[in-house]
Image 1 (cartoon, one colour):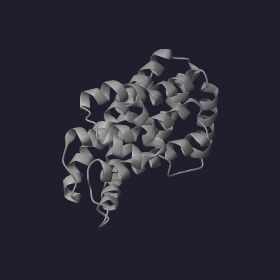
Image 2 (cartoon, helix red, strand yellow):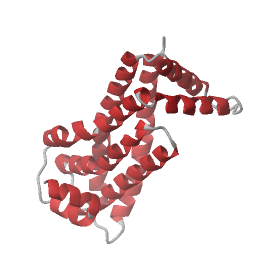
Image 3 (cartoon, rainbow, N blue to C red):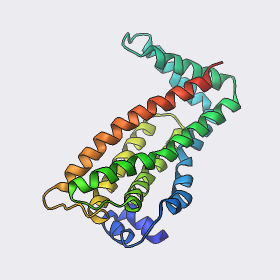
Length: 223
C-alpha cells in the first residue's frame, strides 16, 4: 500500500489505477490516514502560535493597520484578530491547545464533506455510487491539502501559496480518481463537469463550516 500511496502523488493516473484495485473501509482510512494527516494543520497552528508567535503578531499588527483604512473590513474579523493577538501576547497555552483541538476536529470532518459530495454527484455523471470508494477518493485526495498545512507554522505569503497549491492538487486528484476509481467517463467530459460541480459545492460548504469554526475559535479567545 505504501508504494501505491507514494505513486498516487507522483504518478496520479497510475497510482489511482493501482489503488482502485484495492478495497478500503471508511474505518481503516480514518485510522490509518485521516487521524494522522488531519493533525498536521492543527499542530502546525499550535507550533506557530507558540514558537513563532512573533511572526503571527507582526502579521496581525499589519492586518489591523490596513483594516483601519478599509471601511469595508468586517468588524467581527477585526475583533477576532485582536483577541488572537491578546492570547498570543498572554502566552495562554490553554487557549492555544483548545484552538488546536478545534482545528483538528474540523480537519477530521473534511473527508466526510468531500466524500458525501462525491457520493451524491457520482451517479449523476454516470459513475458508480459506492460509499467506500467515494471516501477513498476523498481521503487520498485531501492528503496534499493536509500536508500543505505544515506551512501554518510560519505565517507568511508562502503559506497561502502552499495552501493554494495543496488545494489545487487535491481537486486534481479527485478529477483523476473520478475516472479511475469511480468510473466516471471522460469521453464526453463527464469527469470534467463532475469536478467543476464538486469544487463549487465543496467551497460553498467549506465556507459555511469555516464560519462555524471561526465562531468557536473566537469564543475560546474571549476573556
